[in-house]
Amino acid sequence: MTLYELTEEFRQLLDMAEEGELEEQALKDTLEAVGAEIEDKADGYARVIKQLEAEAAGLKTEIDRLTSRKRTAEENASRLKKTLEAAMMFTGKTKFKTKLFSFGIQKNRPSVDIVDEQSEPEEFRIQQPDKIDKKGIEEYLKKTGDQFWAFMQQTESLRIR
Image (tube, rainbow, N blue to C red; front, side, top):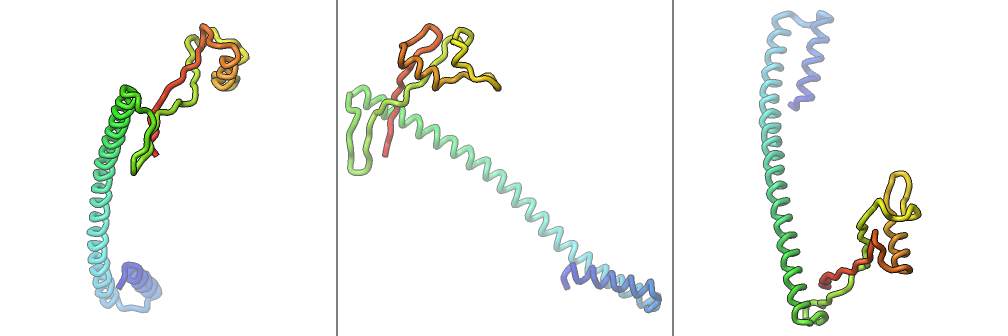
């Protein structure tokens, strides 16, 4: 019997006892038998619960281990990419193809570096919340050139396709 069926049988026995349909000894014996079966089922449930809790703890440990491996792999890939990029820049071989990949050093999108946020013109401030309008500053710097409070910077990075 399932735990649900045992619980239902137990409830029916209690209902019959309340209505006086069972002798006291027969009720007592039947309730003990059902109670023992429920205890057996409870033990089974407890074993499964403990097993699932242990599995969850093991999975958490495995997640932590894999997260650490992921971080290490990402750091290694980044380091290798920087080493390859430096070698390509040093040798002047900044664009080539192999049988498997295409390599190229490309210019990244220009970025704005703010030297002194307090000195920038008010027109480049975005209100609520206070935030610097880097796109506006970028357009302004393209027209006027570098300012004492901000300048354009062009970086490069390796792309592997």
